[in-house]
Amino acid sequence: MFKPKAIYYEKDIENYILGKELMEKYKDVPKIEIENHNAIEEMRQKENKEFVLMKKNLIIGTRKTHKFVENHKVSDYLVPYTSSGCTASCMYCYLVCNYNKCAYLRLFVNREEMLEKIIKTAEKAEKDLTFEIGSNSDLILENTITNNLIWTINNFKDTKKGKLTFPTKFDMVDDLLPLEHKGKIIVRMSVNPKEIINKVEFGTSRLDGRINAINKLKEAEYEIGILIAPVIFVENWKELYLELIKELEAKLSNEVKKDVFFEVIFMTYSYVHTKINEEAFPNAINLYNKEIMTGRGKGKYWYKEEMRKEGEAFFREELKRYFPNNKILYIV
Ligand code: SF4
Image (cartoon, rainbow, N blue to C red):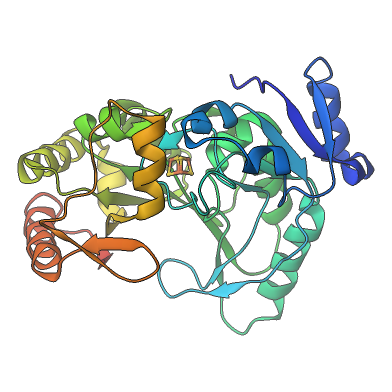
């Protein structure tokens, strides 16, 4: 159970039910009042090597911008929702933006406003829209602190139209199993080979736990997707990912295998990741490999085209072999 070292909070959170609840829940944790969760000067000045320590704090505020961004994958819109950042420390995390200024967990207590906007947009739309509510954080992890997923599902299930989706790397799903969700929630479990989880995805659930969680969620009739992501081309990647696919085939329930869909995403990386990881995890593996990666502007790297092509051919072939009846939504 996450127990924050300190809480940085905006004054007006106490005007919200969740804000009051969190202040009560953590009444014995030291608190520091802040003006704005986006600009905590003290955090900005920390050294990269303090990255993991910074993630032991909790930042609580309200979300001020609620802009939906169009998306064309599983969802129609990416929606800023109740949290940003995370307490885990995956070395490639896409939420690491400007050095260590925004990777720590921030909770936004104005959830009523955010869900209301989603519901209004869903009900006004001509078609049944899907909203990605987990692109800025991990909502299964967040739910262990706020119960926000339970609250969200309970308050969304009776809308006339629309679905919600989110990805996760965590297995703490038991609280979601008894909920009435009316088929409106798509949970996408992100997986990687055990060795990569152990060496790169610090603080997340292990592979067995994630597979069990998928089986339990399916039994509770949630719609399920599997994200093989991010694919990291370490030296023995073919062996590791083949083992992963075989393990999924062996351990997923028949119910899951009936209609689970796959998304495959290759890792992107950046100069900022390199700097933080060198200093925060000096003994960890180096994810930057100049032989097979190339720049894509603004200090970002991705795998060279021939590597991505080889990866795509591999995943298409092996997923077809072991999951012949399941859709691959995309490989990017
Ligand atoms: S679990 Fe997700 S949000 Fe958390 S550090 Fe890993 S990639 Fe980032």
